[in-house]
Image (tube, rainbow, N blue to C red; front, side):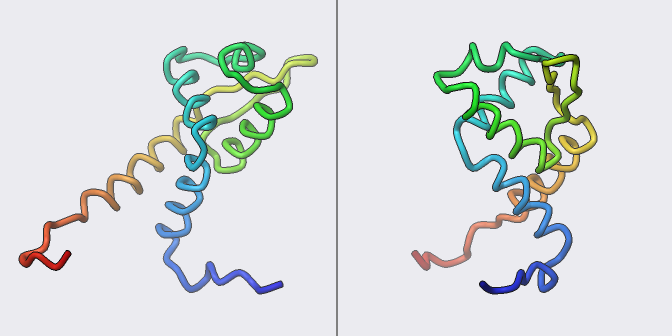
Length: 110
């Protein structure tokens, strides 16, 4: 198994890749939309909103939490989730930095 080469990239590139990976599945995008629309911590309601099993939703929530985009607090048997405001702002900045760097080519190369 190869070693990680992330040290060869800037911290911004590593951070952007982390967020891009978290956003790379439509279920995770849907979960984020639910959390953004509700603007509050949500416990079991996420499963009811999606056509996925509890275990599948839990895996997607885990990915989002590992990326830092959401945070979760245990409340008895439930875990309540919400957007992590600080990480969300950072994700906005790094994604904007990538997309705002685009400039059209002067020639018609492709």
